[in-house]
Structures are given as C-alpha cells and as structure tokens.
Amino acid sequence: MRFILILVVMLPWFVSAKPAKTLVLAGPPAMVSAPLLQMIDSGALADIADTVEFRLWKNPDQLRLLTLGKQADFVAMPSNVAANLYNRDVPVTLLNISAWGILHIVSRDPALKTLTDFRGKEIAMPFRADMPDLVFGLLARQQGLNPKTDFNLRYVASPLDAMQLLIMRRVDHALLAEPAVSMALRKTGSYPLKLIAPELHRSLDLQQEWARVYQRPARIPQAGLAAIGAVRQDAAVMQRVNQAYAEALQYCQQNPQPCAATMIRAIPMLSAEAVVDALQFSGMESVNLPQAEDELRFFFSQLLQQDAAILGGRMPDDAFFVPAGGATP
Image (cartoon, rainbow, N blue to C red; front, side):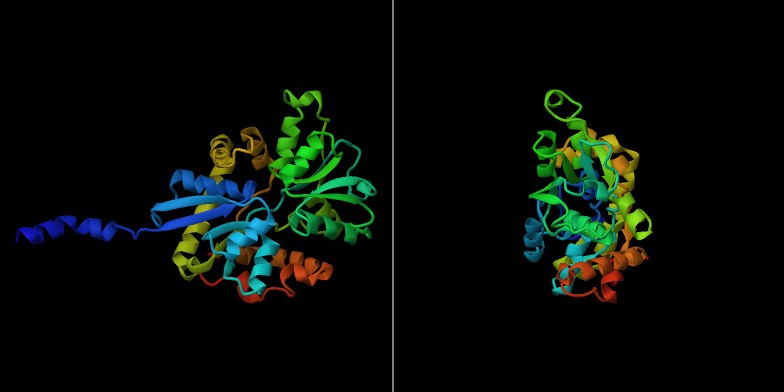
C-alpha cells in the first residue's frame, strides 16, 4: 500500500517530465541570429529541450560544413544555400524567411544613389558567389552592367572585414549586411576612430534598388531558419521552434536594448548600439515558407538565369516551398 502511495505521489513527475534533449541553434554574426539568441536567453524552448546551445558560423564554408556534418538542429542561412543543399538531397527544411532588407552599400560619397553611380568604383564585397555578391550581380545585370568588368570588386571574407576596410580608409565603398552597416556608421562617429575614419553614408539600399529595377516590392528573401537532419522527422518540434523564432523576433523589435545585450554576449565582435540600430533598419519579418513562396520563386528564377549552379541546377520542387509539417500556414 505504501509503495502504491509513493507511485501516486510521483506520478505527476513522470507525466510532466520531458525526454532529455539538447537542441543546437546556429547562425552568423548578423540579424537573423538575434531571435535565436533571444530564444536561448529567455528559455523559450524549455518545454521541448533540456539544453539549447548556439553555434556561430562566420562564412559560407563554415555554414556548409556545419550543415553537411549535421552539427546543428536549426540553422539560420541564406535562402540560396538552403535551396542548393535541398537540391543536392541534403536533409534540410527551410521553415521561414526573416531577412528581407539587410543589404546596403555604405560609401564616403553621399552623391552616389543608384548602382550605375558606382560604375568604375572599387567596392569591398563579402562572400564571393554568395548572397551579397549574388544580389549585386542580379541588380547590375538587370541594368546592363557587367559586375566583373564595370566595377572593381574587392572580395573579402565577411561583412565585418569589409567594414574594417571602410573605416580604416582602405576602400571608399563597401557592400555590407546589417549590423555591419550600423557598426560602420557608429564607429566612424565615435572616439578614437573618428580621428582617422571617413564620414560614411547609407548610399544605396539594395532592397530599394531591387524595387526600382524589377518593379517589385522592396523585399529580397535573403535568409531564414532551416531545420537540419533528424529533427526534420519531428513536425511538432519544427513548428515549436518556428513559432518561438517569430515570437523572439517580435520581442527584439519591441525591446531592442535587452535583445542587443543578449546578442553581444554571444557574439562580442558586434556592438549593442549597432544591433539596436540594425533592428530598426533591417526590415526583419518572420514569414513562414508557404507565404514566402512567390517572392522566393521570383528570386530563384533570377538566380537560375544568372547561373543555375547557384541553386544546385534547378528550381526546388514544390515540397521545398510547402514543407510537410515544418511551417504552419
């Protein structure tokens, strides 16, 4: 009788206990990682995991190794990379698009307002043949410009490297992704760099240039959150993480200071002031993949015309855009 009583007392513990589980979230030193870090800091996934970790990737090669090696469960990545991996039968499910407006050319010359104004100029360009470079190439070719011959593109490893060249007067123009844009503007107005750094301007918003050139909304489906490997078999976990990501992004937009503080604890190469600025200028919005399909298909169609290998040779099939159980409509 006493044994039965002990079991009854302990029954709620057995019922409520969740299986021991660690989830690994990964992202770059960019705004798509802000919600991931906020999710971890707030304990938003405590109902599905005992431990949630963050891993940083700094360049596309690290991202691909992380994904192919299944070293993370959810990874913030460029949309073209997700499509390329999917078309190569890598187990990846893109859940949302959240980065729609993070690319800008920052310049010392306030008179340069369109891409044609930069013809013949040297521009620091991060990530050769990946997202910033791809968007730049599309916009150039759409206007009859050859990105290889009409511009002097100086390729560097990351947006932060391009930012350093800019603030140290090694280049006059750089294509940056937030928060590197805001960091460059902040650093050039602060001691001690103000003694040597140039005055900088948000000269060209690539999203506005996209709208002007293509006659479409000023939104480019640049990056989002993808599920990797075995976690794709658990639709409930994917939906829960996708929902938590959207909620964390909303929190960050409404509470930029604490969100920025959380982000720089994990990515100290950033600055809190720049992250706060970037939350204002990034145009972040978590859109589930089915609702982002039209904009993704148009973007991908342009990339395929440029070079089919970018997406692994073809447009992803319908299942890529409507992942089974991965994103709630």
